Length: 434
Image: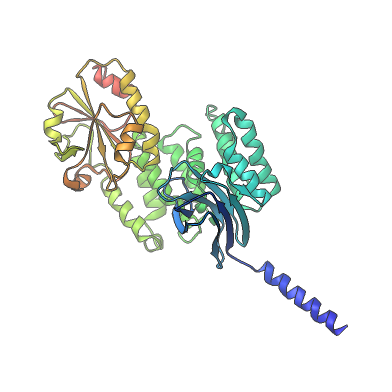
């Protein structure tokens, strides 16, 4: 009897110990992969630039790999890919705290990777769903994740995707206030796992894009997101950081009043100033420069160079054509990757008089390793493609070009005529219909 009691106590102890486990253990059996570094990364709100937290060199025909962390984690969607490999060859896995996951990778193609646990099997099926299957197949898999694993990070990811799909299908109904009011239903806005998802930024963007984008609607959206929290709330700084970036991206909507409102109402106070001093200092500088580059003013002079070392000044360039259109971009900027091909297509398909407008792209970034690939992918080969002369970044201060993408339309006198990519406005100016 005494032996049985001791055995029962030991079993209970092990059971409680198991329940209290934290961190994660991710094991992968790899075959037919040679001399490649497998990376394990966490996302941070978007699919761009995931943070690598661990990596292993595969140097055997058959190799068992483990990524471990004994400390408690928030839980998030993680990425597996090969260092210096094809960026599209990757797979996302759902990792909750205390997760013990096992996968099998038979070659270098992640779309063939197998998961032992049912949740990630469904998540893989969602990622690999063929476009031919239509949106219904993906929605079924998302609903399955949400229903069968309601507490998991995979379910949170699925809920955000379903909200985005619903917002997209009903976006044309500008009077759909019910959808906007219920957008966050079922989502804990202070769930820290939101920060570690690749679709959190897109989820927020869908929300703010539901009504027509203007100062009144955007400010109402900010109030709805932040009004019941403060600088010490879990996701407060995360949301603020995205909002200011998004406002910079939407500069063509003239949201300066909203920028000032958000800054004064939600950032320019204690303890926000000290919780994230980098955000505060950077945003304060942007606030002071909101009206620095004004339509109707002369473009400040700056120098640049092309890929073969030819040097130019903006003053000499704009004088050669009636108009000059400049697209400022960062090759790693997701919005740039989306919109620059559209910009190129617009000018290619428009019947403007030959020589009327000079098209120029300006690499507004310090890291230019993907510059040429970006130009090819965006079909900008016929444009004048330049970067800062001798990598001198001082132009940023004069032009206030701290974010991407940005667009300027300048006439031959150096006067700024437009500060956005807007097809109707560009066409109107170039055809003298203002």
